[in-house]
Length: 118
Image (cartoon, rainbow, N blue to C red; front, side):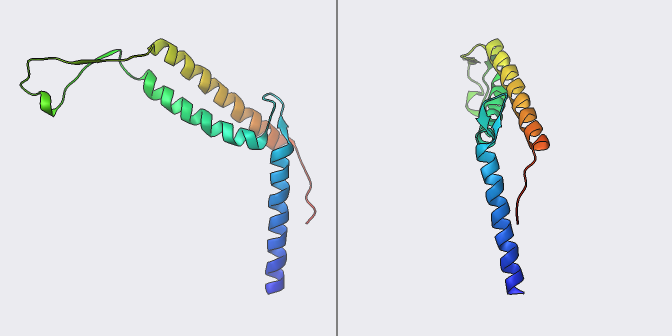
């Protein structure tokens, strides 16, 4: 039983190594980067998209209210210190890039075949 387990573990190592080699050497044509680079790029785009989504949802001017303001005669406003329309455009651009990158990765993963000798 131990010998069979050792053989299965060897095959797993071989398979994972082959996949790693594939990911580090296969270039995604539309982006000119390897799969392993794309696997880093996608989460970066996701984070950027999430940040821009929050930023684009901000109103240009918001009246501040809080616990310490009750009864105060001063009204405070918070203003967005960036161009919300520019953020919307950036969001749309990043969102499109993310979709394009994911699709390109999916195409490579679904069309390229390789063999593994186990």
